[in-house]
Image 1 (cartoon, rainbow, N blue to C red):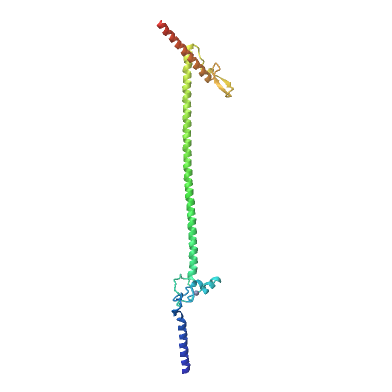
Image 2 (image 1 turned 180 degrees about the horizontal axis):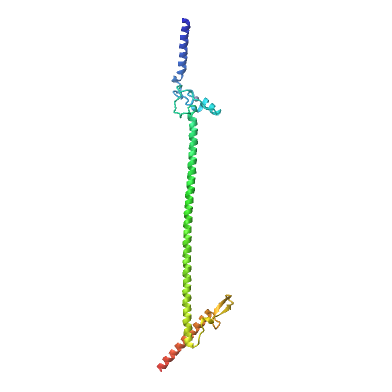
Amino acid sequence: MSSASGSETSGGAGGKKEASGSGSGGQLPSYPRNPMAGRTCYKCGDPDHFANVCKEYWEAKESNKPFVSPPLGTGRIERTMAPGSERRSLSADSYTVRSESDEMNRLMREYLARKEQVRVEKMEKEKREEAEREAEAARQEKARGKLEKEAEKKREQKERDDQLLYLVRMEIQRETGKKIESEESETRKYDRKTRKHVKTNERGETIENEKERLRREIAFLEAAEEEEEEDNELQFLR
Ligand SMILES: [Zn+2]
């Protein structure tokens, strides 16, 4: 039994020696420092590779199986996990989730920005249209005012003309002793030029004809008056 125990002890020592030998392999000064020294794969906890080349993780990922991380205390770096998600690889999935939610946020921001821009453009367009409507209304109001003024002017002009015509008629009547008939005697005459029936007086004259004739008569009377005055002056001088 003692030999068995001795052999067991020696075997154990041998095993220990072998294990310590393999563990201190990276301590040789002539070799470059092992980049994995003191580090482990943060997915599976193995000390011989980084997580980006973790075979276990990527195989699980490819076969669409949840990656089961090893139990704690095997050298794996502990990470805070949300309850219920312990059995999934946090790092890779949360990275994907985060980038997906970033993308969603970006799309959402863009969507809202577009919507806001459309709203602002619509508001500006409505403002422009309102201003145009107001300007158009003001233009029309101004035009209406102008037309009314012109109509008023015409009315006043016509009243002055009628009054002048009346006065001139009275004057001619007084001068000539002839009675000029009133407006009731007016007739209508077809005017070939304007193709309209125009008012005429008892002489068959239109208002324009009459005005012209009256102007000539007034000029004649004035000339006659001047002649008479000259005669008087001459007589006075003699
Ligand atoms: Zn690994």
